[in-house]
Length: 320
Image 1 (cartoon, one colour):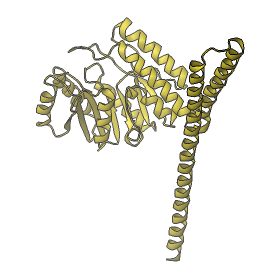
Image 2 (cartoon, rainbow, N blue to C red):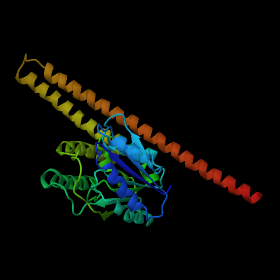
Image 3 (cartoon, one colour):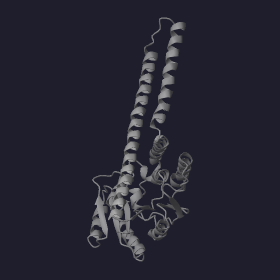
Image 4 (cartoon, one colour):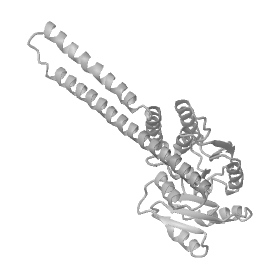
């Protein structure tokens, strides 16, 4: 299979038919073996029924129904795990992305890129509720991670299958997939794509999702910063809480000197909690470091065994 187009949909009953028509029209001239995966993310309308009726007429269309509304990240993950194509293209189901851009993305993948990101240079959305928060979030993500992605919220993207299927996905991590893959060494490029105003239904996104993206972004930065040095990462936080523990002990000591007979339950209790947290983080760092080092040893042994097996194989061929 050359191409899989993964489209999560939620309460998009009116968009299903024109979405299917637009994708099949765009792919008809590419001379590729393709499939379309519609992921129904627990819709409460006729989205699944309309998609199922189309799938009965076209074997290239597959419909996956989730038991409830899990969100776009889980919808995409379900699509990735069921996709058979060497290249996976994702897009929204609201017809704001243009399937005609798929051809340009495939060309960029064939040039050697692992990921091709769409950039909505002429975005057809509301300024206050969509454009401005998106620009702020994109700048913050680029500044914090050092990965210059212009439009993290653009849904139309192309991935090499072997690159994207290995990444765990949760919360709002689908927006940060370009950053995650880039930090892990994947080669990516960005191209301008078309963007249309919504024709059917209402938007499923709002300002309430911004804080989730920010939390995921901070978590991602911490993970990639301390991935190779877990003891160092946990050790920093252990040291901070250890210093706070010492400060509260000193504060308690001065309270005894200045105000004899006063209760020290609050200060000593706080000091005990901070000290316990410091030791916990330190031991957690030690355990994480041991796990990481053990993993490195196993990888080295695996590589060594592979090299030995190759030598044995080549010597066997020569002897024959």
